[in-house]
Length: 372
Image: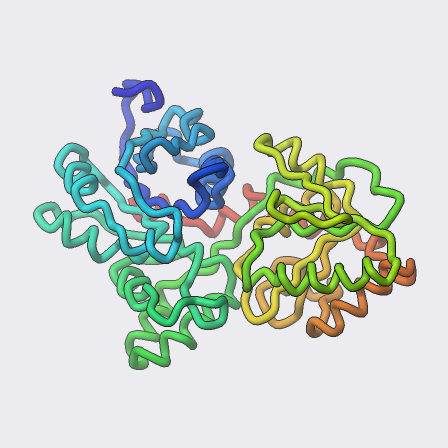
């Protein structure tokens, strides 16, 4: 047994977790990966799993040490896979999983990568005893810039093999079933409707941090890609800057180099949360699609309100009484009003929103143990 594996204590059940790593590689710390953060929060906050062992594969040379701290976690190297997510979803490490099913007594499979699920079932064909549940963190859809040739059909096929599959919101469940209906018949879509379950992602609780900056400070703590609206946002802020407005934009991507930008990311989560808490307001420039943004819940948890869109998943996150913008023209108007000190969100009480989303509360719906 290697140094990061669980000790020799006895466990009543074993869950094999199929991981979904999308943040690793050169200059990227896998411990900041969203799958790792979700599993860490689950293990910290969920009740009734102290006697359950979790086998969690990891990519060679990218060890999620934050998961190694749990006595009931066994980390096993599964080989190398691509750090490019669309390619990663096609690279099922069959030899590794075949060995797992040979060497280990598995009671439940919890797949966070539905695209691998059917191939895994083929691999374990001589030991077809375990139930399978899932959690889907991402979908390759035309709504979020998915490539023409993608793994969406593999994703749906994997979910159909499961007893249940958690998704981050009712909104994304409805969208996935709508897109599946463009390929599959009504019977398949009805099966998806039965299997997909909104399991919200949580927060660690409300911990307002630092005093706000003296000038308008916007927080863009997302990855820079099409669905986050990063290019649109920074193009918009460039125009405001050249018009003479004074402001800062906090970012967590070190690739953005602009005169008004300040990098506030950190490998230490507490330092990161403390840094972003000084922002005046966060930006959610999502347009046609958004996953349940953990970056947004990070900011809300330290007292940073966000400009968020109508029509996506954010009504479920912040509630019916929270002001949501209509479209990007409206978002641009709100940003300018903040720059001119004609609008403030500081009056919004974020604590009830964050308390509702504490991990200990949202995990009541994550009935993983019911399938053991």
